[in-house]
Image (cartoon, rainbow, N blue to C red; front, side, top):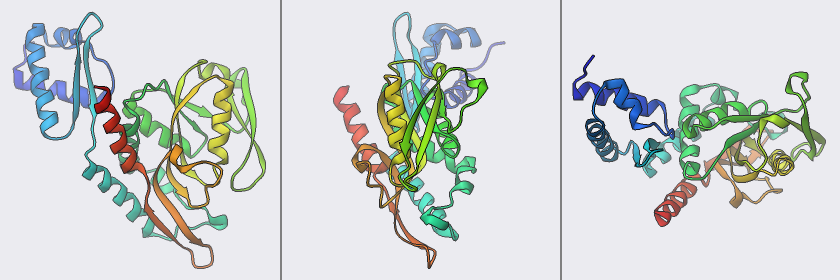
Length: 284
């Protein structure tokens, strides 16, 4: 069946949007629409120009035998700030302070609409890095990891706190929890991650930095390179890890368990996004 150019562009646009950061050979579209390569290239140029004009993202074309097209979503500074502001407003909506100074985030983590936006923001910061996997620790970090990995088009690796027979041979490390100061264990199946992988570590909340430090220690056992770390929210007393080393969307401070109130403000994500964009331009 022959499709008009307008129909092809609509279908190709949908496919690109659903498959970010994936190399799609031109032959895929050539065969799908039974069109000459030159016609498909013209279609892609139209989509590329439209995406740039509307700040939707970049359409990168690669030539050669292994060439094709890659769509990279792009967030403007204004869009990124809107996402952060929405996140802050949601955090302020209800009484979220729990015993021990923890913040209730389960409703946010369980909301796909919000998580997709937060994941898109984090992915924008790191999508120009060479990353083999997004690594997190069970259980609340899992939705964060999948939101980021779906944009980066990378697999998710989940670190667990207990050993499961179905995991096979595992590697375990002990770490000191930054909040409870107790010794805890992290376990990862050997086949989950190849040695020498480049990884992005993500989690929902950072307080004390014990979990993030534990993940980094575990990655050393796999000889993996940590190319970035990101959390949705960090607490003011995250003292065991330098805040310049990781991305945090919001920062919480002045936590008062008696009044149930706390201060929430913008984190360093916007600055990290701008920095990542500048590095990309320097490397082009």
